[in-house]
Image 1: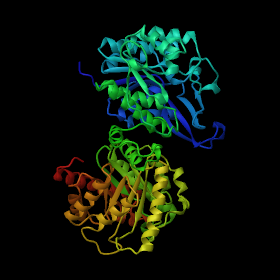
Image 2: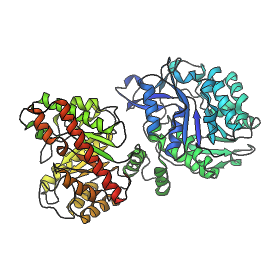
Image 3: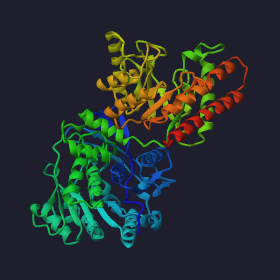
Image 4: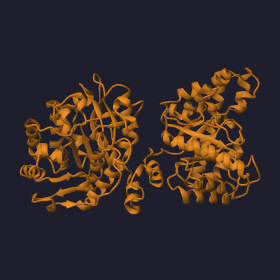
Length: 635
C-alpha cells in the first residue's frame, strides 16, 4: 500500500525547561529556556527536519504547555492527528541543566502526567496503517496502560506491513527505581525491567540503545553478553551506541565488536549530552527508512548526535536535511559546532518554520508621523493603532500570509493583542528619524530589552544609510546594527533590516546592492530585507544577485511604500513581484494616513476608520496578488 507517513513515534511528550546558565547546579539557575521534549517528541521533530513525513502519538494537557507542544510540532512539520488532549492531567515538565562535561542534572515532573494516560483507545488503526514505521521508547512499557497502547500500535503496524523500532531509552527513575532527584541516573540493574523489555523485543525490526541500555535489555553488565542475549530473542538489527567509540550495527550474530558495521564518527566538543540519543536516532531512522547502507545510516546518526552534543537544548539542536548535507560535505572547522558561525547560519535559516505564501503587512509602527498630527496624544495614538490592528485582522480573516508592523512605545496594546492571531509581527527598534541610527531607549545599551520580547516577533530596524556615508557615520551605524543583530540572534528572534538610501543621497541601479553587500561583509545576515521600491529592473537584479550570492536561505524581501499613492504602488509591485525573493510588502501611510488625520480630530468614528482602512489594505493585497499572478510567481 502507499503510505502517507514515513514514521510514527509514540510515547513521552513534555516541555523541557533548560537552565540558561552553564556551569552551575540546577539550584543556581537564574532562568530557563523552554523547548519541547521527550524522546518520541524529539525524534518526530528530528526526523521531520530531515525530510521524513513524521507523526507523533501522545497525550498533552488541556493548558498552555500542551498547546505549546502542539503548536511547536506543527511548526516543525509533524503530523499531530495522534496528539490527544487530556482533559484532566497536566503536560509533563522536565528541568534540565548543564553542570560540566560529565554532569547534566534533570528532574522529571511526571506525576500522573498527560502522556502516561495514553491508552489503547488512543491508537487509531487507520492512522497507524498510514505509516511505513512505528517507533516506540522504553518508558511507555513501564505502566500497564501505556504498555497496552504501545503494543496495540506495534501490532497494527506489523499487520499493515509497517516496520517497527525500539529506542530502549532507559531512565531508572521513570521505572520507579530511584527518587525524583536521581533523573540523571542512566542505569540501575532490575530483573523486573529486563523481563518486561525481553517480553516485547521480538516485536521489533530495529533495536537501538547505549551499552547501559543493552545491559538492562540483555540482563548482563557485560555488553557483548547482553547483546547476545537480546539476539537470542529477536532477529532485529541491533545498534549499540558506544559514546566516543562510535556505534555498531549488528545485522546477524554478535560474535564481537568487529562483527558489526560501523559508521564514521565526528570528534566535536561535548557540551550537552541531553537529547543526543534522540538526535542520533533521528539520523539513523532517516538512513534506515531511505534504504541506505548501515554504514551510511550510522554516519547520519553520528552527525546528528554530534550536532546535539554541541548545542543547547534537544530538538532545537537537531539539523535540517540541508544542514546535514552541508556539514557532511564541508566537514568540521570548529569542534564546538555552536561556535561555527557559517554552520549556525545554515542551522538557523533552514530550521525556521516555512512561510505560507507571501507577507502582506500593514505597517502602523510610525511614531513621529502620528505625533505631529493635530489631536495626537500618546493615548489617542495607541487607541488608533488598535483600530489599525482590527482592520488588519478583518482583512486577514484567519488566513496565513498577512502581517503588521507595530511599535511598543505608542502601540503597546495593539502589539500585545496581536499575539496568537496568526499575523506576522514586526516590531521596530530605531529611534524615529535618527541618523546616525539610535535605538529606542527601552532596549537598553546592550539591547538587553530583547529578552522580554515574545517568541515570533521580528526585530525590525530602519537605517538611513548610503554608500557615500563618511567613515565615522558608517562605523557608528554599523556598530549599532551589529549590536542589535547579535542580540536578536542571542534571543532567537528573526531580524529585519530596512535600508533607505534615497533620503540620504542620489541613488542609481547599484546603490541598494552596494549597501546589501556591505552589511553581509561585516557579518550581518538579516532574515528579512525591507527595501524601498527600486526604480529599474537592473536595480532589482543587482540587489537580488547579491543576496543570492551571500544568503540563499533568506526569508525574503518586503517592499515599503513611502506614502505613495495606490497607482504608484501598483507599478512598484508589478516590478518587484517578478522576483521570488520578494515576499510581499509592508505599507502604512497609504492605508492609514488620511484616516488618522480625520479620526484624531473627530471627523470620522471608529467604525468608519476601520472600514476605510479595511478597504485600502484589502485593495493593496489584491494589487500584490495580481502582480504576482502577472509575473507568473506564486503568491
